Length: 568
Image 1 (spheres, rainbow, N blue to C red):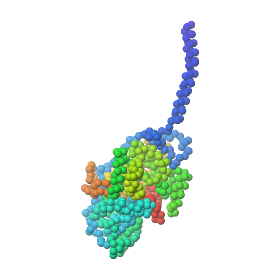
Image 2: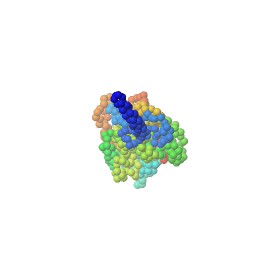
Image 3: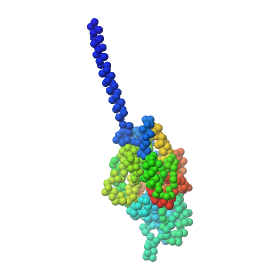
Image 4: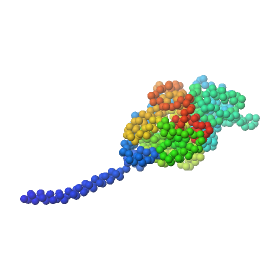
């Protein structure tokens, strides 16, 4: 009987507890659901304060993504293991720059004719002018003439009043090339008066024979000739000794002035103080650039109206198919696309990024995804004071020279375009040790960026690395003779059968010294499986479009501002 009473007692207690337990459990379930709903979308955990735009570009913010299925594409919070050294090129220790003249190349004193003076007026921005100066020395050698220090373009889109001696060390330039070409600072006076040279122009890609037939007869008659708008006026293919002269000019004789070099070295030092390695990005994404390209980046009517208004400034500008330009890889990558490419190649969010750019279309909104992917984001304006940049900031060429130095000294150089700065730095970095230089395979990457939301990050990474083979600045990546010589100076790259850990090719401080050569073996014509689709520029002057594959020779000469604006 007592047992029965105890059982009834526990039964009644449990009956009252059961509702309380149910209420508490239900409350816990509701709390968990609320917390799950309020949790933020996953971001790069290395930088939780920044949202990475993974489903829409900076320009394409639509409503479709809001109802899409949960995405599987997510940038990881740390770098992925890479099958290569991220900071060096494979086999680079087997290659070195070699530009010494052969024994057959006579000294300037032996070949220079009296009363033959060649003057040059360059065109475009700093780096386009650099190609003109380099080719002017070779043109003077072909004509057996004395070269007058080239005039820099002071009236172009870039509006820089600097002369040669304010950008380059003029005395170094003259003395370094003294054995190759006689160079003077100005024309001698004639009859006590200033000598005004006869002015003319030569066609693009003018060969040795072209100079002999077109310019030499005028030079013999007039004795002083000035070639105007001198950019890309020399053939891509020349005699070996003339090609090596090009390299001596570009890589050794053209040295920036002391103020530019010292400020540039200061910027490099500050980047090195922040991190052992850094990437330099040359970013061309200015409104004028995008307007001319005819490319479309998903900004809707606002983008079409803004860029369309800019395009109206150029009457001869062709009407292009924006989708076709992007499909064919002729459009610059967006800042976000460059960032995703670099992360996929194995560079983590902790990497320090120096960005050389003009005014980016869309401003901070466009740059935000790149800064989220690489929070350690710098420019010359952020690592130098206004006072330090004061003597440079009013001169576009001097500011460009500072960027050139920081990009040249970077461990990895990457570009979203194929302008003159990108080309010259690519060639220079090949010559001085094949430092990694990344050019986007824009044609294939474009399709990948379109479909990235339908794949995992691992699949995206694998595809990027596959597409970028042959676009990373490795030795033998491009066959000799392909591309512009300034970008691919194959004649000046020699190969050693045994690697040399210490090689004295002279200081690479922006032009110092000349290199000693122990073996002068030009690269063989290697046909790699993933050979980049570079045009043979000697035979392909008529392709159209802008961006990654643009040859600036195709820009209509009736629109000189276009050519100048796009040049660097």
